[in-house]
Structure formats: structure tokens, C-alpha cells
Length: 289
Image 1 (cartoon, rainbow, N blue to C red):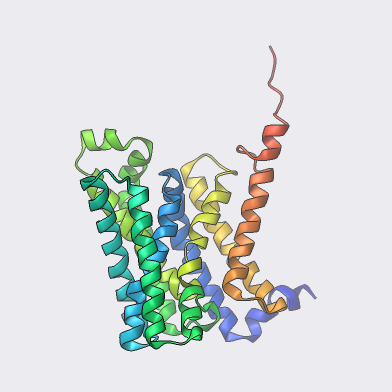
Image 2 (tube, one colour; image 1 turned 90 degrees about the vertical axis):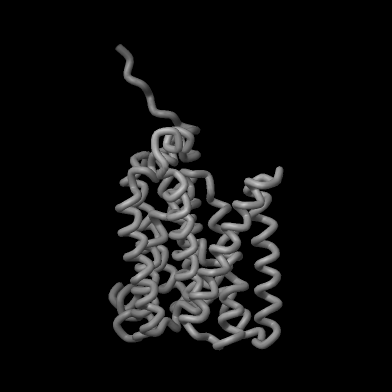
């Protein structure tokens, strides 16, 4: 009974195995990136950037159809262009960075929908916006594995200055010139993971496996290494459970995965030992001398 419920779908159907492997790769790369986004108070930046890649992916679709390379390259270029333009406007005008980013990502989202509509059908638009994790081919799985590998290797190299920038960006800039390059490298990792996730979960849900596991982990640990490990585990568990729920109930797979991650996040908010609601309502007793 338990075998039929929890293992058989992945044994019997190749598309389920592919979806599981792709989701695990996504969680491995996006989890640590989401933790640093959260610690740097840039959570909404990830959401904005996930919309910003849409026009590039749409141009790739317009030129080559559902071609992996064209849509990936287009998404990367669009994401980097929007990040650079938003940064230039924020530094060259009185507009704050969050408002500048909001302007560009809203325009990008609308532009992307228009571009897809020029050639594609509603099915194509639905595919781009919400992805198709149950239809991952070999090329897409290789892309997801490459994104996860690049993310982990890059984070291993820039880990220390990235942590210092989370604690005090001004201190890092005052003692080292690594602040700017580290920030740009980190933004590139955000865009890279969003473009990878876009092929499986679409532009609207790509940020889900990045931010929800990181937010859930925040209520279970204070140590950065533990936060990162918990975020990865939550992301992987969300992918596994979401695929099973989707298979059993015929719900859309991408939204099912994100809903599971949201459910874990809600449980963490309520019962997490580090600042959770229950912990605040029932504080522990202090030892008295």
C-alpha cells in the first residue's frame, strides 16, 4: 500500500522520474540562493526578476519556437538587462531601487505576454507562464543540473564575502573592493536559477522553489549552514510531495509543488522553534539561580 502510494508512480512512469530529478536539481541550486536573498532583504527582487526574464524567453519562442537554447539565452539576456537598467536608474535618479525594479519588471511582464501573443496560442502562453515539469527532456535536465552545479561552485567561492555583505555591506566596501563584483555575481546566480526554473515551473512560479523553502528554514535555524541545508531539504520534499499529489489528484504539477512548499512554510511560521507564532505565545522558562 505504502509502496503503491509513495514509490510506484516514480517506478512505473519515466516522466515522473524525470520530473523528480529535475525538481531535486532545482531545489539544490535555488535553495541556497533563496536563503541569501532573504538575508539581504531582497525577497521581492527574486519575484521581480522572474517576471523580467519573460520578454527574452518570449523572443526566443518567437524566433525558434519551444527551443531550449533560444529561450534560455533570451531569458538570461532579458534578466541581466533589466537588473542593470534598474540599478542604473536607482543610482542615477531619485527613484529607489525597489521602485525602479518594479517599473522594469512590470513592463517586461506585459511585453513578454504581448510577444507570445503575436505568434503563439493560449496553450503556448500557459506553458511559458506556468511551465511543464512533467515534460522535461534530456536537454532541459542537463540544463537544470548545470545550473545547480554552477550555483553551488560559485557560492563556495564567494561564500565569505557574500556573508559579510549580508551583515554589513558598507564594511565590506570599506575594507575590500569585492563588494560590487560579489553583488553582481550573486544577481547573475539569481537570474541563472530563475531561467532554469522557468523551464519547469514557468516564469510566474519559478521563484517559488527559491523563496518559500528559504522562508520556512528561517523558523527552524539561526546558523547559516543549517538554514541552507534546511532550505534545500524543504525544496526537495516539496517537489517530491507535490508530484505525488499532482499524480494522485490530477492537479497541475507546478502549482501543486509550490502549494506544498507554501504549506510547509505556513507550518514553520506556526510551529517553528526560532520565532514561530507558538514559540512567541508560549515562551520557554528561564533558569533561575
